[in-house]
Length: 195
Image 1 (tube, rainbow, N blue to C red):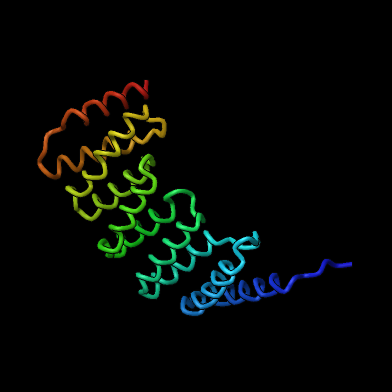
Image 2 (cartoon, one colour):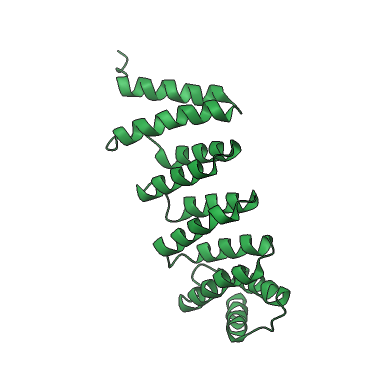
């Protein structure tokens, strides 16, 4: 005898069928995923839902539709509800926003990620990379410097200095600054790690 499929499972399957059928039609995909997330929030205790992954997909569809604020709201909501691996979703969306010319909307996401997860060195690395890529080297330094300090304090357990040292050196150079004490200490630590 086949197991009974609950009404909730039937509804989830129907919605996921619409998501699949939407293909590259972001309007249809967003509509189906909005319904899916509404259903997930109405059944928060049910483990049938993958809120984190589908929130990211919905945010991507919103971005494709130019609905930047809806994308930000979706990711913030998923993060606040605990459906993210630390700051990962905030940083991922901030990165996408910066690469699509929406730096002002990305800025509060970077700040929120740092406030919520101040010991995650990769937030500083990612933000530094993105600001450096758009040529805002002064802002990149405001991320790379505390990231480097954090990595040094933690004994570079995440091996972040491998990226931080050259990124920060590039920003210092672009701004016409000489390497400073922290750059020298990080460079020495990195050399010691390599030997």
